[in-house]
Amino acid sequence: MALRTVHDIDIELPTLDPGELELVSAPWGGNLNDAHVQTGRAIRTTLIDARLRRAHLENLDLNGVVWEDVTISGCRFDKVDFTAARLTGLTLERVHLVNCKLTWAHLSESKLSNVLFEGCRLDAATLDDVTTAGPTGFVGCVLVNTVLRDCVLDQAAMQGCRLRQMAFESCDLRGADLRGNQLSEVSGMSSLRGVTIEPAQLPGLTDAVMRDLGVIVRGPKG
Image (cartoon, rainbow, N blue to C red):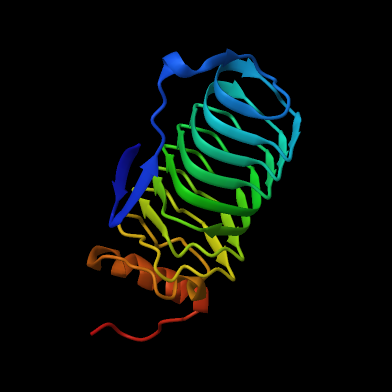
């Protein structure tokens, strides 16, 4: 088991031995155990009530897939394209996503524990009712125009992410760590109650709060 630290949280990630994985072609049906799926397309396919365990998926085109009630544990995703995917009722445990694309994806009613998004694109994605049941990190990710709605991300940490025009709606982020990110264009300030930031972020956060509240400043300086 590999361990990655993002700010103050430790994330347990899978370590996969290629020699122990069976080569599988995409698309596949049903469960996927101890498998390596390397290069392929499974666009607009559906996967329901399945389990992915100790699998390495890389260079796959999963554009527009529909995954429902899928449990993913001990898996690694490298350069997997989930553009416009509909991901509902997922359980992710010890999952590492590297340079994956989730642009316009919709992740809902899902639980994340020991999950790391690294160098991923989640721009214009929507996260509805997503909960961190364990430590979850976002490092060097793009979350431009991303919407988080009714999410509980108390065990989340973000570092070096692009959060331009990111919106929080009715979220609970108490305990989340947002140090190392630009917050000036984030909206939904009430959702940021109880988050951790650093002094350098205060000017940007002030700008975001004033914009969110519609505050108008008039009069001479000084």
